[in-house]
Image (spheres, one colour):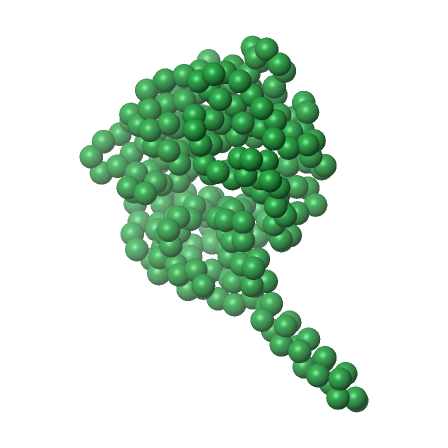
Amino acid sequence: MSYKLGLFFVLFQLASLFAQEQNIPAKQLASQQMDIDVFVGFDTTGDLYYIKNNVFYRKNDKELWQYKNVSLGKITKIDFQNQLKIMLYYENFNTIILLDNQLNETQKINFSENEFPILVAASGIASQNRLWIYNSLTQQIGLYDFLKNSFQSITPSLEGNVKYYESDFNTFRWIDDKMNGYAVDVFGKITTINKVRDFDQIQLISNQDVVFSKDGNLFFQDAKKNRIYSIENVDKSFKKFYYKDQILAIFTDQGITNYKITIP
């Protein structure tokens, strides 16, 4: 074997080793029994957000708030990153409801009544009194100003279908049906995110970091380092997980358990 060929073989083995799965141990913090249907997540103050009988709840140790609107059918999407402006999307009626921090309705937006046709397939809270909207009629992502009732597309028509998406104030991220990841900022600049593995559930933490589940197992993917980490010591009978600020919440039939994990 030549020196160059041998060196290549060694480097290939090292690259494969570093790309292999490694473990992240999870340390259990606290558990609470809760009879709920859908666990949505928790905010920076520790308040819990969930759905029971299609009623949306916000709960902490002292208070419980709720919002109910049976006329709009099933709640499809919830965005609570701004606790003063919480968004609920009702797909069956193409309608978004905005709530204050006590879950009082502040605005109702029926996109079927818009001057220009919009069929919402994805939505989220954006910056400066705007909403992220993916209009499935044009397959474009845009920003809807809910004070001016105006919509502006910021991307060309997307190729492929949106399999999963998430957003924050400044970025909309999505995964297409070929498992390719993308992100667009409020100025319309599109960035390619590394390809993700097949998943049952997934949470996009950033343009590089992903937490996902497959066949009852949890994983953390660092696309920048090209590494997959297996998250160990968590209940594998979970129905939903939610990660924020090194805390991993696991929702099972028995309730919610929080774990501390340290992301590499």
